[in-house]
Length: 441
Image (cartoon, rainbow, N blue to C red; front, side):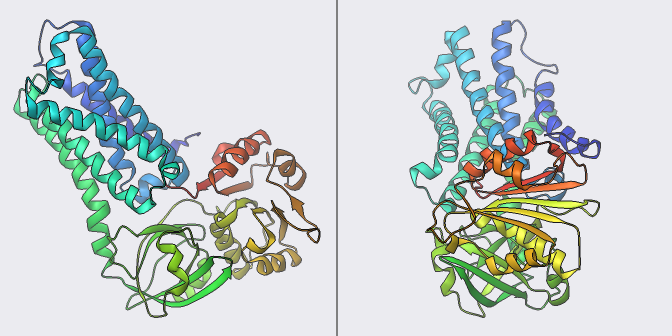
């Protein structure tokens, strides 16, 4: 991703979080006379420590940190950095054990049971973090249970790492260094408490109520909520929020959903809507939610929004990933925004196209060039068939090298993996692409 000059500060802050601990570790006093290979192994360990601490920052829901890059990019960084942190941790252990057999005692339960047990727990928990994230779907782990275990395992690893630095003592022998490592550990714990505790508790002061639950198609429902005793939320079309329905805001069933309603409607009535697909977890009961049910929101987040200076908008969406695009199109309609827009919308079957009549009406008005692509249809279907391909994008969309064209892409992983490279090949500058995947893990 290309980083604009105004975003350099956020990148620099992340780099500082990762690099500063390494610099602090090797500021005197530190042990003398150690082999270079040992110092390299130690340095790799501190890099792993710092990258793990930065993971808590990346997921702390700070709008100013996330806004420049977008959810998709931020989650990619989080996932890749997590894997690299675990590899650095394993390298730290492997290097030290290889260059000096004395380090094997750290992992020997017969030498020091408590120390060895803690370090083996760290290795196991770190490995578990990667496995449960990369293969969550294949293992059949529900999102909410993955989210709970992910935070707890990461915090466990971080706390044991801080204690390990203190116990070894070579790089925390003076008070200011001990305070520094303690600050990192407390900071990681504090960010987790802020994200999973403080923010949800704050949302208790701004409750919402369900005013409508409407079926959109097979296993797809739109839930509309209105503020209860407050002015609502200053959302922008295309953004998302964490939604708790009939649950306290810190419950594990809290999920992020994109707004599907118009920004203009939210300004006029305070109401916002989410279009939710039944996926086998608590969402399987979304159609049964009664009017009047209490709800809570944390947000809004995301930069999946149409820029004021964009001259045209292109949407390439799949399945339930069309909801943020629908929010933008509804907002353009309600505000009389006549900028041209193109949409390629992929769905498994014609019956699963969400808001089909509404989209076709926008197309008939001449403001939306609409293309449906379905994988499975009978002979009555006259539209495109199959999946969204490079050729279809080339045939259907305008000149993507035009600097005024803003491109939005949202959908399942396979579609995103195929479409994003194709969009860049067709001339879209990475800075003009807004992408979100409907898979937070």
